[in-house]
Length: 178
Image (cartoon, rainbow, N blue to C red; front, side, top):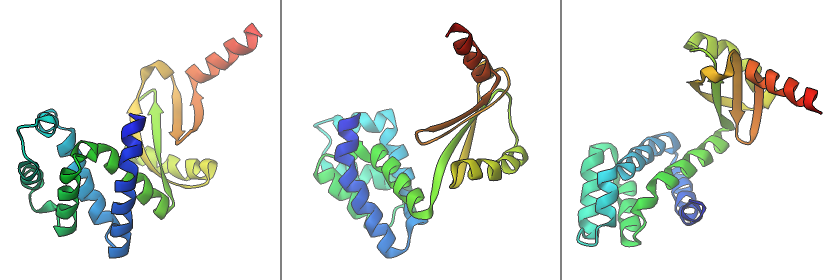
């Protein structure tokens, strides 16, 4: 995994620079996400690894799978990846591109883990408080984990805010054992 990210990084950086120069960060982010989803498909992964499938066939496969969503520059990028046997790295390239885009926009991804389902209004009400704690703009995703018993846990990069009942119980248990 780490090796594939290392190999994907220069491609993602070059793609990000090209998107930034053209002023199309958001548009290219959508297209790169589409390409990454196609590359992550198990059947496509088999085709990428199949020595009987030629590079031009793979390029055509990606273009047809994404339809008109891919513009000329990205079509050329697909061709470059195909020529270098790197189409399988598209999921990593997509993730790196997204992280570069967020850094450029000054935002980070926050994963909110809640003991109970949270609706959009509750997330919107919580967001300013979380942005104050983490000192950055946040884009959120919410998952439910009933093992938390109550409250939430928020993960932003390598930082974590644990305001869950499970976290408090674990902290109490640690304190009592020491």
